[in-house]
Amino acid sequence: MQRQTWTIAVIFLLLVGGVAVPSLAIVVRDTQNDSLYRTLGSSLPYDSVGQFMGTTTQSGFMASGTLVSPEWVLTAAHVVDNAKTISFSIGGQTYQVDRKIVYPGWNGDLWSGYDIGLVHLAKPVDNIKPAQLYTGSGELNQADTVVGFGKTGTGNSGDTKSDGLKRGAQNVISQIEHRRLLVADFDNPLPVGAVPLGYSRALPLEGLIAPGDSGGGLFITTSSGTYLAGVNSFVGSDFGRPRSVYGNFSGHTRVSAFSDWIEALIRGEDPVPIDSSEENTTSPRLTAYPAPEPGSLALLAAAAMMLGISRYLLRNT
Image 1 (cartoon, one colour):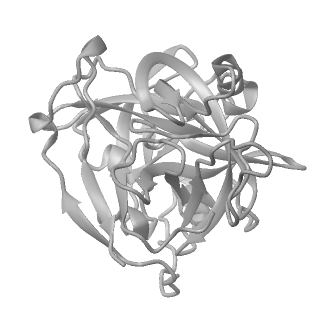
Image 2: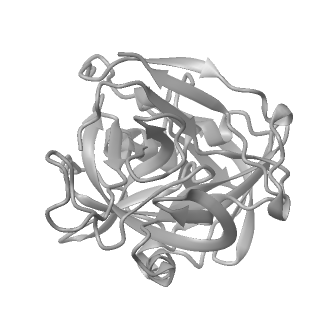
């Protein structure tokens, strides 16, 4: 579904609060068994997705990232730009981070599509196969799989509970913005004949990322294998605050736009930033509105969980 020209609110997916709280993950469709999403997320093609735990000057946070070489993890810029300490857990082990790199074009504007960064691990991961980067240009209208840990819910309820389990969900890349941003909608599994004109039918395991899934991976599968095509950046809404309910959408930084930059850093070379001279200007501009600092956000009740909102953005028509 194409983005409407209504006001759109967008929210970071970074979870802030106490460092012991779980991250948030996949919201699923109401009519499917949740065990199918857990099975998908735990399958071999997505072993490269792990979890960050860190601290900022205000609080602790948890987020996600994808192993792209034995020593490097790809994530969102907003996960690492203000991190004071950070570690990465994958394959049953925890690794310390000794270097973090934020893409030089990142300025806090989610819709610009520069929300991407890399962290270097102090020692290599030797029991997990790194993800392969997608370097083609055929993402539009491709089915994708997103994977994450933690809080879940349904398309009607939004993100409502946290159990720390890994889940995967399916979607379709319905839009590409600024050549650097992949967008997908959370379609309602309506009965045959009840889908409005211009809307898509939901996939069997349709779902959407939720707050706390920052930096995790969006994967597509081609005839030659499964590839990392996007980095989870934000959840947005055409009708108020995003809650990962039906009709909300997600934004993912496009890996193919940054593959040369990523690969140069992995090789130990000086990367050349991508050419941003050609901009897609078909979408209304987003204006940033700051939200309260993490330390001023209210604690949620169960399991010592805090949902922190780093920023809201509103799209003006």
